[in-house]
Image 1 (cartoon, rainbow, N blue to C red):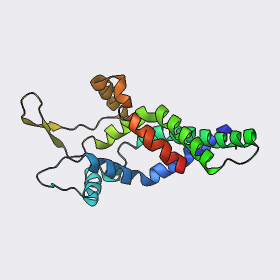
Image 2 (spheres, rainbow, N blue to C red; image 1 turned 30 degrees about the vertical axis):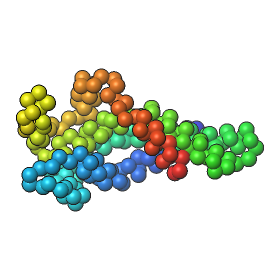
Image 3 (cartoon, rainbow, N blue to C red; image 1 turned 45 degrees about the vertical axis):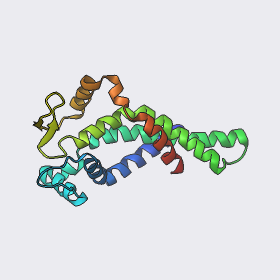
Image 4 (cartoon, rainbow, N blue to C red; image 1 turned 180 degrees about the horizontal axis):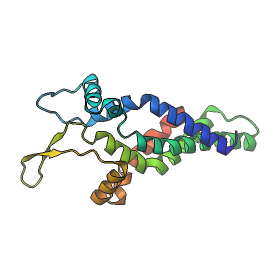
Amino acid sequence: MSPFESMLSGSFAGALSTCMTYPLDLVRARLAVQVKQRADPRPTFRGVFMSSYRDAGPFGLFRGITPTLIGMLPYAGIAFTINEQGKRQMKVIRGREPVTMEKLIIGAIAGLVAQSLTYPIEVTRRRMQVAGSTGKVNEVLCTKTGATIAMESPKLSMVQTVKELYLEQGPRGFFKGLSLNWIKGPVAFSIS
């Protein structure tokens, strides 16, 4: 396979798997940040799933899929290309198929590079997924007064989310948590 064919194959496979599993990922992300509310102190997978569906219909289960696909296409394409071309080069250099450990190392490098290049899109996606996930009103603790304030959780577009993140945290905000993903991502990709 040529590098271009590898890129297309990886991108298509990533996009297809993302579309098929996205509602599950959305609910998982929302459960991770669910704020305890008086009416529902212990949210369940089914409850969050049904709430997302009730609030916006079937489209509610795909909130944030645009940045997910925008991130997945280059991530899967880059990772698949580096992985396939790395194995091909290993065969040319060594004159044999790469052994398991070499495949793991090539896969880890592919995952590391792809993850690093596409991480800002991942941060944007997560923000969009959890925006408004706790209902129309969130209770927020004011750090200055210690009072609890009810605040609206607007659902922002991708562009608005990027602008908000940049204004709040600057360029570094797009890379928060990347170092943890350097551990998780390459290991996961090298195994797959």
